Image (cartoon, rainbow, N blue to C red; front, top):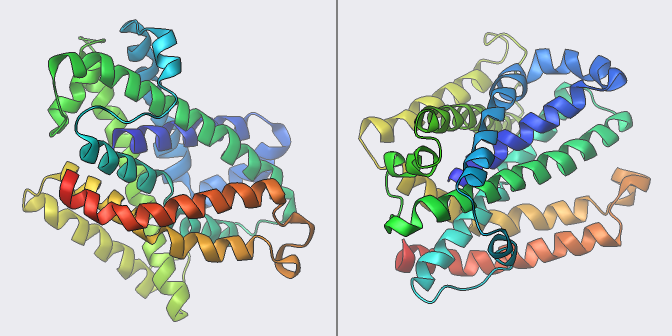
Length: 307
């Protein structure tokens, strides 16, 4: 879960800064940011730069950098293989999230994007995901150095905070809490809106984040209901970490249904013209489809064995 929220917040934050530093892009993007994503991109995402503190924590713990480099090659542990596999499925399920397609594409429609926005989106995808992945690796390094020597398997948020308080005793807890707050706030907005987009577009309702609720009442009702329903497990004191891990594993089971149609769409010459996928993109997407199909077959058994 930490990998997901930290990577997402940091990736969106760096993408936001890249976009707003270029004059032409700023003139084109700022009005869209103000009308569509002030809460998710400028709000939660720019505040999400606090997640850079995980990099600081990893460096202060003085890791063995050659060992870190060798750890980039995935290997199976000697023990707890089922748990390791379940965590792998959960992380990939969180990284490849189908709901982002509904959220991002709906934002493109509301913002009336055209072909001139393609370079901007390549910057977001490239730099944002790269930086988010870098932050995720920092979380792994800090966790390995702070938690593994103590034999801690994270089951609660206070345990997770130890990866920061070990390196930064004075400010570590507050930085961890702020990182979690900003990342989860942005994710909550994205998911609730994505579900509203899904229902509104599927049933032909009026939909727009910028409209008054009275003009798209059913759309507003759905995201309000989602937020209320999401609060019920917390009120019942259900373990949020376990719920998150299970939901991420289940997400991996839906990936083939989301990615296969997407692959056909990205190769449609009528729909995309000269902007359709090349062979490199098709190869990458095909590998992701194969990986997601395997994950779909093993995620539920791993959830039972390793969860």
